[in-house]
Image (cartoon, rainbow, N blue to C red; front, side, top):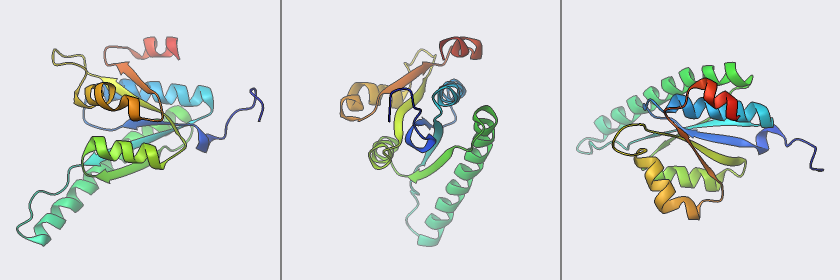
Length: 162
């Protein structure tokens, strides 16, 4: 393949970790814009905490199912916006466990993921726990670059740089 040829959509994926943070919207907007510009795709990862109630297996399983349904609903809502911006449905991943571990595992499993896009919090407490952990502890062990999008950027500012 020559340098001027574009890579297939499935080989150029921008991964966004989905949570309830305000800065998620900036990360999504950036990932969508970049995916369109590079003929790539967006992938969404939602990690749910494992059920903690273990006294009765049926209660723990019910809690697990409820968390998964909530994650599916959230991803459906977000994926509609991604599809509107990019013209294609995002790849959706739901995992159960520790967010850092599941994120690294997914990146290692899916060779099409080329960039991790995270939004940085704007508060006094730093960029957020996931951004801090990945940039400080794990970034040297990842096979892909991390793009950290400041939560304070507007869509117009993101548009100007993408």
